[in-house]
Image (tube, rainbow, N blue to C red; front, top):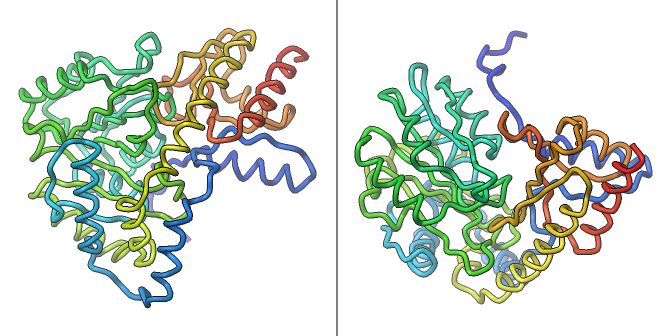
Length: 389
């Protein structure tokens, strides 16, 4: 059996690898504190679960239109109007099975040999993996720790060449918890006027996880980007629906039919029952979302304080998502070695910063999508391990 050579170009997501290792250790009787996975530890709100049950009982057992249920696409447009202050046509919304399909469809449209795709580093590892898969050149831009892991618009714009086809922006960001302030987004959008050949993919999956009154700046708020921006969001993070597998992309009018055609060729459509439940998520009460955010905020403050109390660690306060990204260079231990030691010796599952790109070396990602008790216990183990190393 001979695989296609492009299989060697495809990377992975270390969070799932570490999760599998942690589960294997637990099966052997080892106690593991899970501070690695990017999934809320809360259950999906009850009203959404009930909507899903009712959908099954009501006979939502068949295919839906490839773009998604019209009522759900309307609900998405309403939600964007409410939380982003932007108007979108429901016909430009494509409902997909998770957040990743929107990334994949964009890479397939704009990536090929001879093209360049610019992406954040450290960043969600699937960006770089899919760029390589498309055979485009992956061009990283750094996220600056002294700016709270925001990018410099000037730096990003300086990477654009005639071969650049796509620029990826992620705010709030995985793995850093950084956000793009309006001042930098304004500069980026203004600068892109000089590069009309570049399309932007803006990953806004953590748009509702913001703290300290921070503002979410969406690419959809800029009229000049209407015909050249793809916005990605979904239900996984905001509504604790990671296992329901549902997301959406907002596409320019001249691209939506191409995205729909890729969907038809790959997954046909998203799950019907999940789509019905997703309507309830958007239009139903939002109290559970607010409650989760309060809990995340409390944990954010705890993990920030605890990480900064570890010798050799320093951590800026995350402003969004539910990740802390401490600088661990003061320990003198490489990120991968630290990841392995903390899992196998200390019983703490966390992720090497290098798993999110070369610029992540010297950092670790800790998720605070876990209880305050577990966060304190996990970081106590980290301190103890380093003290006895």
